[in-house]
Length: 451
Length: 42
Image 1 (cartoon, chains in turn brown, purple):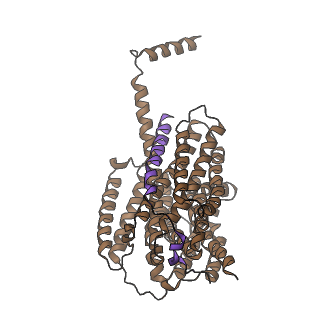
Image 2: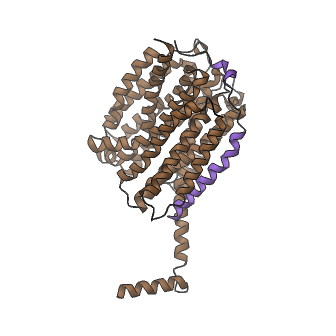
Image 3: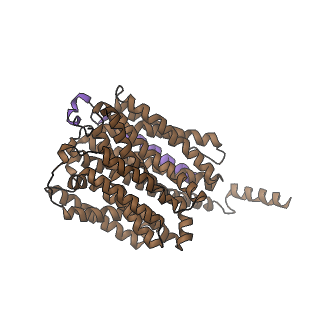
């Protein structure tokens, strides 16, 4: 088989399980009520099936580069897909909420590594001139997955049962395992590496990132720092991460090589992707709340508004993948950011009179903007990294992206609640007989009601 | 309603604020990326 056809097969081999993993981050959200009913669990217990997956995912992502070097990338990739497929089977067969949470942790551990591995494999498989196309494939996976996840979960739960949201992973997993065995090969620099295990790095990273992820996921529900649980999570997380940074800077073979952040482009790329995914996930969480609670849209109709944004990204990304060969990548990123800012500005003008089109177009603009940003940004961020450091760099990049998404969801939903309280307070403040507009309005209402 | 507008305003400001960071990134020069030529494709 010629190498041109082979690289596309390699791309499909790594993106198939990656898409499955990303869909699985959001697929459970809509089926939570069915799972609770079926496993006799309370809402707090049931949400642990989402939190546990996200936390396990966040812990394993930064370690992926090191684990790939330690075990060999092909072996580790196949192990991850096998574990993901088996844990999906057991999630579907779960007999209690505790067993489901346990298998979701295994699923998260297995799945977390697949996203950085796929990005590294794509960057090494495609020649530098085609990195744009390679990152377009990666971008489609990471941006389309979270949008179709809730749809797929809802549809499968409504038409079959919640068990099938996990069982559908099994055939995809088996195909991925077979394809990985046939088409993935370790590059020469990864073969025969002898490495020491950085135990302290491993412990502090797991504790720090795990606590941070649980804090972000549970913060809003527990009313943030008024809960002792959240305060302790925050203290442990900060302490563990500070110690982790110190340990890693002095370790000979660190589990995450933070020295890669000395590259200015790489550091800036990480800061930008943090805010871009903060914005993307913040918007994804806000729009359905606005549509369903204020505008009275059904879940399906609000989904119909979200979907075109994902489709817009899907159309834009392959075009951008080709475009970055000729056009300055920075110009494309700036255009993307301006379009995204314009889209959120239009969304900030929404009111109760907004019709379907007035809501749809800003969402499409947001999708176009995101599509324009992600590919050139990923390419620019990773283009100056040596190939020996690529696994480590993609792990850090994906961790920052993941944490940006979690911060986006946590902070936007918190600000929404706090600002709603603020505006309610301001409205109530004026409800006194001494406030002229209120007194006139109250009199007019009373007259209308008497009439 | 106003709380939604506030959050989207914040997201807009945040996006505008990251624009200057882009200009400090290094441009890609494909010919300089010879390091990546060793591919996993057999």
